[in-house]
Length: 421
Image 1 (cartoon, one colour):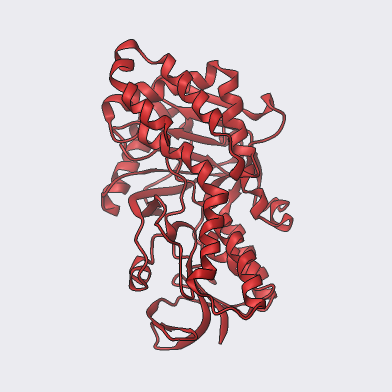
Image 2: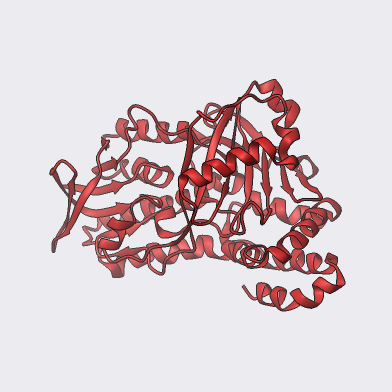
């Protein structure tokens, strides 16, 4: 009998398993063969993630090989730049996330945790005093509490246990390797977030610049993987707005392209009797920016802290007790989410207004120091429950003031609604 079984060894599952194994007998199950290879991921890692990562990892240069000092909210007309030196400290770091996951799993094992990789879950059975997990080999494992951390890959399991399924879109990314000197020459930023409704009306095209590699991709809609890959290749080869960044970088179409669902919008409940859901599986991905690392780490930390007390008290892990997890996730994250919800409503779906608004916003970032300061503060704020929504309102009002008069007339109701988020 395990105290906890965790299904999924991504950022939320690995982080939770590492923290929980300090006090609980824990099994970590992953469908992919993580002993052979963990898929390469290059991410921005804003300073607001720091409270959820032990210093052991935060200070590891192999995980975080470079500081995140400049972002580019790029539009058709402008490079909307924010350089952290204006405010005294980096926006965070750039992570080689597969190394973080590997080191979390290594520490989990050092602490007595057990892993089962290359195994999928065929069935979950509820019993009055435990949950039974049956893998694809017919082997059965019992646990006092089940933790679902499957990202957007485990929705059938989630649905079988009575949970809602998050909204999602299909996304794709790839990692391209290049000499560090060439990356330094081509990229004066570590993160680019670019909106163009011809690429997607649902999300950004992006660059994350790591050490000797860049991650690039976009969030689409309902395209299949082949369509997503074909479009990303065309963008990288032909899209004029990004060609200066690709100059001299050699890559071919045989490099791995990773596609899959990207969850958005939290489900209404993250817990039931003897089951909790972490991170992206619960739709805990920041609206507009689709930042999953923050929510994966935060929900894992909140769960590991709460469950330590419940386990010590010999809890039966009822929904009534586990609701404290839902409430704490909402307290820590949802004030910050309001800004993302408002931005998503303003910038996505209507191609006629997206370009106008995003051009204006990227130019506003260049011309208004207070706007830059508020965007900076959102990246470094280590208590997101105290995110200042008045700052978001200020930025919204300044943005509205900069758009053309005709656009003001048609977009005023949209701004009014966004301000109410």
